[in-house]
Image 1 (tube, rainbow, N blue to C red):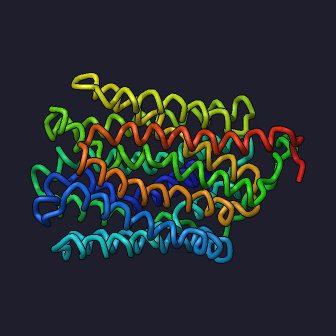
Image 2: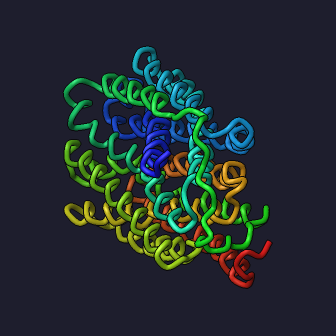
Length: 387
């Protein structure tokens, strides 16, 4: 199987699995009034999705390790696509919508461990950071498509039509999974020795870091369009702004991965640098008005949401033989952050205003950078290949 097909599958399975939650966020200006859901209610809906994914992540990561990444991708695509179509057809209230999203979220726990194990098996170590960076384009691609759906589908045909299109796309991913016949390529003698294996306490610290770093991403995905409208931008322009910001995040993930491969880095320094830059950007967004708010929002996507590929790379590169199980721990941290932060930020937005969610996101990035730095310092003292 070619690297192109591995990468395409890895991106599409994550994109398909998250379309429902990000479409709800992007189209909330019309879903909210229809179902009588407030900004805090949007936070609850988003939180329910990611908390359900977090609760299932570690368990399904072990299942993926046993049954293989091919079966896991098929299950994820079929469940995600079916539930997205059911939302379009049957969602009639906030509780019904949230319940359907939670079922879809349990299957989403399969997507990243499966994609990570496929990459660990098929991609040479010297190219993994680039491929994983591109694989992590799946989430911003999902928000990009959700933002693009606002001016192209939602405003013209309604939000249910957007969910139908997304559901059909998710089901199509299952058809792209290859059969079992082809074996992964053997290791090359030119491959560098693997870095020190990450122990459970390392994974725990990275889970804490990923959880808090996700607060910035969740703020942008759940409230970005609404915040842009709140500062004076039109709904059409706000949707396009989320699209451009998501593209900036994709570009940053690729660039960070490519530079890490080129410099044979571990990825820790890049994570800390991006998180630190994101702190400054999110603080500046608190007082910004158009057009500067739009510029800063794009930068926030690039910095505050440019790190996930590097985080996954640090785990996959060190624990390639158990990439699905090991990455499920850090993925659980990401889901936990994505679940808790909308609840907190929804309350902040409801009580103080949307502009106050940005300093909360900045503070979370400070904690994230500190947690990752703990692992960076601990593993820096060990020679490559040490176990």
